Every structure is written in structure tokens, then in C-alpha cells.
Image 1 (tube, rainbow, N blue to C red):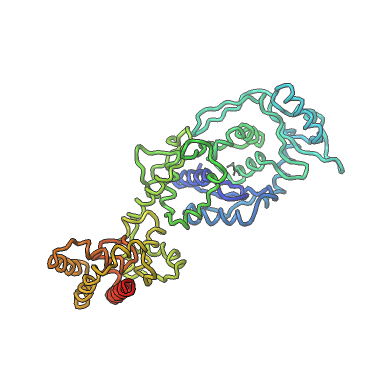
Image 2 (image 1 turned 135 degrees about the vertical axis):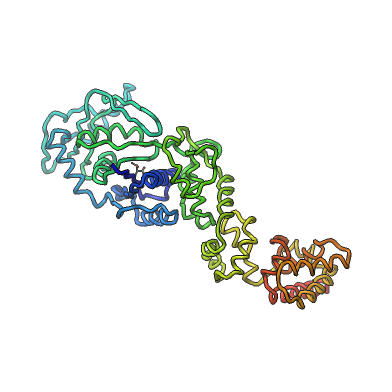
Amino acid sequence: MSVVTRFAPSPTGKLHIGSVRTALFSWLYARRHQGEFLLRIEDTDRQRSTQEATQLIFDSLNWLGLNYDREPVFQSHRMENYRAKASALVEEGKAYYCTCTKERLDALREDAIAKKLKPRYDNKCRDLGLKPTAGTPCTIRFRNPIDGTVVVDDMVQGQVDYQNAELDDLIIIRTDGTPTYNFAVVVDEIDMRCTHVIRGDDHLNNTPRQINLFHAFGKAVPSFGHVPMILSPEGRKLSKRENEVSVLEWRSEGYLPEAVLNYLVRLGWSHGDQELFSVGEMIEKFDTKKIHRSPASLDHKKFQWINHQHMMKLSPANAIKMAEPFFKERGIEVDDSQRSQQIFEAQQSRSHTLLEFVEKSVYFFSDVEEYDEKAAAKHLTLKSQPLLAELRQSLEGLSDWKSVAIHAKITDIVQEREIGFGAIAQPVRVALTGSTVSPGIDVTIELVGRDRVLQRIDSAMDWIDKRSS
Ligand code: GLU
């Protein structure tokens, strides 16, 4: 039987970081076994589900490359189906109509709590054979087995046993005709032919109820894997804000999709002590046996490091393409010229993210509007002005505009004047970039380009004049 996994988010806000990770695990499992990965939007809660959140799910999966194999399934389109399946269970005596009022159920609950017992339904309507009648609100309840054990043979948690005596008769259809989570999920898993369900361990306690429903439908029970939650860097439960990531915010912060997947896969899964994975390697090596049973903690530093490692592997052509929107935001149109690619190569080891690359590279593409105050005060001085003038002259006549030849020109001046390299490199760096940080000065000069270099040195010399007069 071929593997079918699914991701089943509720579109009620941003995606939880743990959900994105379970999406990844499910996707990897499907890809590892040449199976299918499906998407189901669990939008039965019409009050809380939004189109915007649904779009966010599509866009996030798309950006991460977690492609799904069939059209997404929307639970809200399947209401009739859930009702029909529930009625069929009633017909077969596996479910029943219940007319207990909210007041009665509340009273039962309060009574149990007062007696320090676990609140549960007392099965009042279980054997009454009620039929729905107009004007009397009724639910449909599942006739859960009274005794016996439900064994969850979990891919991650191992064997977890539940006593049926602990599980009461679950409402499967509410008075308003909508299905409850546990019921809709089972109907969907069956219709979608899901073979493996990988999800957060907050759903482990739902699983015995779902298994009983699979049995009632006479269908095979999928394999379950319940993945532990993700904790804060300090090891505590994530706050709402920490938990609700928008993957797309990572995109705007300049993270690479492959690095995000690498970071997420390592939150709770390992393969020996390997930290870095390409997507291909993740697929090849993914194994549910290596999903950790204990929770993982977020580690922002590690995320940065992983992203940097993936930046180092990025081809310059690809990097420029991915960085294009960031340049655009700054009013810069980049082309995929050799120069753009060389600029990336010069900045690659200095950039943890695409955003950092772009922020550090603006001066290659647009004029320097102002100098960093401290840098200018220190390096653009009457003392450095003659050095700038001399370098300008020397560069103006340079025919081979390459870093090696540029370096030689600087060295000539440095040796002749018996000064340190920095005495000239720093002033010219401030002149060209506005600050004291850039790749090697020879490479910087080469890539800024002759005309701009000469013009920026002129501007710097003017600035020194104005400052000193
Ligand atoms: N909609 C549920 C959630 O987002 C899905 C649980 C499941 O995967 O079964 O928690």
C-alpha cells in the first residue's frame, strides 16, 4: 500500500511553528516513501477561520517547497458528507441521537467536579433509540465500546494504552449539524486514504477515540506519530507570540527556504550528529524512528548559523535572483550580470541572510548619500585627503581594472609613503561605501566600478574641504 500523509492545519491565525514542523515531517515521510502528501484545511469553525489565514498556509507551503499532491481538501465543503456518515453509523447502531440539554450536561459536569471525579457523559440517551424530531435540538453521539483497551502503537511515543472505560460517548455531530474535530478527521482520513498521520502530541489523547471510530467504520487504522512540542530557548512553553510564526516573516528577514527546513527538521529529529542537510538529504535520511520523544527548544543562534551555511552553498546566480525583491524594496534593480554575481561572492561569507547581503551591498548599486558620522570624522580628514588624491590619480590611469592591479597601486603608495595599508584603505572605504565595513578594499574598488570610484573620491575630498573650511 503506498504511503499517504497529510497536513491538516486550522486556518485561524498564523501557523504555529510546531505545525510547520509536522508539515515538514509528513512531507518528508511521503517523499521518502514515494508516497503522496496531502493538504486538508480544517475550517469547520466558520467563526475563527479566515481566507487570509488559508492563503498564508498556501503561501508558506509554496515558499518552503512543501508541495502537495492533490487539490487541497476543505472540511467546510464536506459538511453533507460528515452528516451522511454519522447517520449511517446511527443506522448501524454505532451512534445515537442524544437530546440532553446543555443545562443537563453542565449540571452533570459540575456534579462530577464537586465529587472530584472526571466529568463524563452518563450515557442517558445511549439505549433510548431516539429519533430526531423537529423543534428538539439533538446531537449525535458515538457509541464508544464500554470495556477493553485501545492500543495506540505510536511511531514516536511507542505503545500507549487507553481504557475504553475512560472514554465517554463522544458527540460527533453538534446540534447545529456541524461535525466535531475527532469525527471529521476520521471521515477525512478514510476518504483521503491516509496511511500515516504525523501531528503534534497535543492530539495523542484524541487518538484512541479516533481509532474506535475507524473500527466502527470497519476501516484500517492509519499509523500515528505524535511529535513533541517545541519549547522556548529557555526550555519553557512557548508564549503565543513565540509560537505563532509566520514563515513568511522569515522570508522577509532574508532566510532561505532550505535553511528553514534544515532548522525545523533538526528541531526534534536527528541523523547521527549531522547538522546540515540539503532537502535531498533530508528526504533520503528521514526516519520516524529518529524523531525525538522529548521536546526540542528553539535556538535562534543556530538558525542564523544554519542559514549562513546554506548562504555559503548558494550559487551566485541563484542568490541574485532570490535577493531581487530585497533590492527592489530599496529602489534598486539588479540584473544577473557577472558584476552582480561577483558582488554576492564578495559578500557571501559576511552575510547570514539575504537581507544582510542586500543591506551590506546597497553602495555597489546606488550612490552613497551620507557617511557614517564616526567613520567620516576618523577617516575623512585633511591628513587623508592627499592620499585620496594620489590614489584617485593612480586609479584613473589604470587600464586593467581588476582587484590585483588595484591592490598593486595601493601598495605602491603605501610603500612610497611608508604608511600602513589601512591609512589609505579606510579613507577610501568610507568614501566608497559610507562606512568602514566592506569586502577587501581592492575587490570593493573593482566592483564599485571606475566611474563611481573616481566620482566618490571626488565627493569625499569636497566633503573634507567643506568640513575644514
Ligand atoms: N487542525 C488540527 C490542528 O491544527 C489538526 C490536527 C491533526 O493533524 O489531526 O491542530
